[in-house]
Length: 435
Image 1: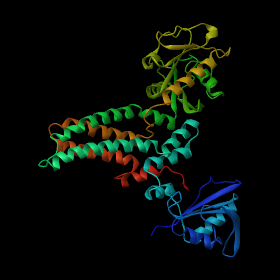
Image 2: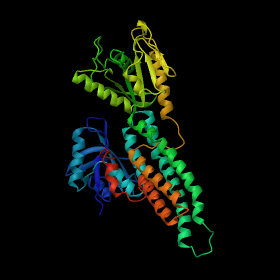
Image 3: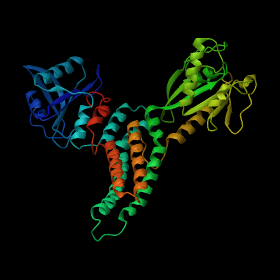
Image 4: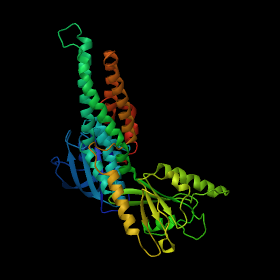
């Protein structure tokens, strides 16, 4: 029999309100044992909670009956006063009544197991809780609403249509059916392969919205990277001195730009160095530059070349710093903005350009954003199997059928349609307790 679980669903600590959630077949009995009876489902009621002869709290109580609840089970919510003594008293009472504290993500896992949502929607719940920007919340809400699941379901429908054609030719070869029926699956698979390629080509976008867009400042020593870094984060985050090589490690700052989460990194100046500490900082700067979504090359007057050039793409940004001391030569065919932090010029233009670039990179696409590496792996598996099936159609339809089944299985694992036991732990381990 399923155990009845409970958890504090609001952050621990002092607050006006604390919410304890209960879910499982013993929910109604637990409420009755606390002195709460005769509450209509889905209607809030003010009740006095009692246990072992003492009053625990005056609480707002809500009761939900299966399957019309978040978990799909009988459940309840106790809206308590937020004092620690009140919370501990109710938690102790629920434990004494035989209820078990919930594991992280257990409420949402039960919702999945009871058919209230699929795995992609369950992941969206975690993303929504963790969201810190408007873009993260919007993406999570879209996924929770089923946009990603519907896209994968469409892919699977196409696969099953193609598989039905292939299986019909194999299983009913002696019947009166059209010749070369399996080949009719070719156009379906061609279209599906194109759609999967589009989804994979855009796979970084959703992860960048979730995890943060990565901007790295690179350039020679004393180019003004740390000064620009401080200006962009609006605080004295990096040490600035006239001494070359002051910055010796990667310094990160978390920002919100245009509604998107951004990680801005200041790095060591790129040059040859015999100092082992500075050399390690330069190595880290190079590694961070390789992984950046956007590199900003900071060039002071006289820095007309340098090691930073090897990392720059035409779509990156060049900052011509220290404009009050002269002007560096901008590289051809690249966007360059002249700045002077001492005079306060060019910084507004830099911020506006960065905001436009992030918006262009992370906004808008026909396919809902792929938000996790797990999804990317399954899409890649499905695409490989679809391409193999397309190749086998004309020569070995029975092999094409096996490939199509593997593709359908890969897509089904994203939403939990099939074969999910081995990935449930991975999905729900990152959830907070109470969700």
